[in-house]
Image (cartoon, rainbow, N blue to C red):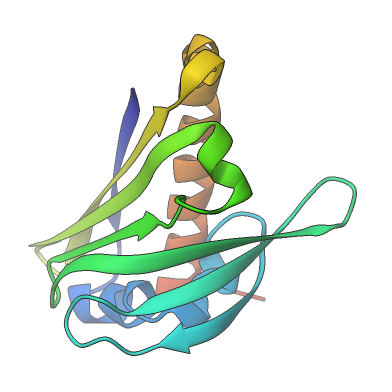
Length: 153
């Protein structure tokens, strides 16, 4: 299993970050390689689902389906990739992202964890997967900070 955690203090209130994190349509603004989000379906406090189109180096789009599995407004947002019945099922058992927010004197401490459980021979690539996950989380925190502090161009 590859679980990687990154933390950052962002100079924005929890409410500004929550507005971005809890709305899947904002993912292209802050989540790495996201070209667009489609098919957002409301599902109450947990259960919202969406399709994220991720760009590849070759310019193609890869579609991945996600659903929110836990949400505590202003504090915690957890979403998981749907892998069963998709091409990802061959090498990923589970892909889960957890985002926790804690207010700190007007700023917000953001903790992001990405947990990927690999399947079969893919498990041998776990050290490389950890590095890639770390880069993804760092880029996601960079993007979130840019959007939440109004520094986008």
